[in-house]
Image 1 (tube, rainbow, N blue to C red):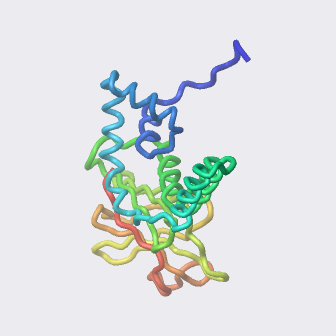
Image 2 (cartoon, rainbow, N blue to C red):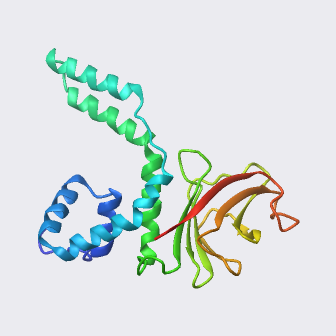
Image 3 (cartoon, rainbow, N blue to C red):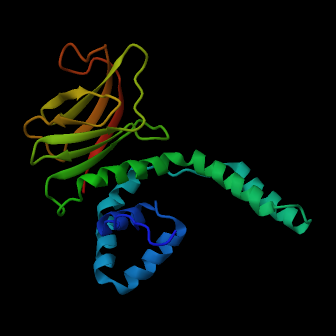
Length: 231
């Protein structure tokens, strides 16, 4: 329909972040790559986000595709030689299944993309950090964005799962020991950091009785941890 409202103009910094995270459609990504070759400002935004997010790659374990993806590819190629109907369609369906299995890394990127909405950091060493808090599962439990200047942290639950009848409690673990930050809920929240919190600390989550630790220290197993990474 011509003459309609084209919608809001995409934020160029957010588009650069999505380009680096790999969340753009293939066509959009190709267009943006060509634009970056001609636009130094756009190229600079992309490079800035690459530098900002590159350390997070170390927090994502490599995932090998399942054997059935390779088998589906070979079967589709054989079917094409034999004149089997729509081999490409079958292969695409198999790839979609693999994409679902690999959703761990994709959801991590999605979680980070959601956190971008609060605005990019102004530069390295400005007191802003991200912790991808995980316990070895396919998904991170939490994504925690720390601002030591304001003494607060934003907590976004992703895959955190409390055992039945128990609570999950968030901790900042630094030179002075473990300090409680509050219970982990199911929606994003903001918590207050303990005095003196710095990049050297670790974010941890323990299993506690309903309502949290009665002693002010972790009493149950620590099931998730994450190091602070400068933005």
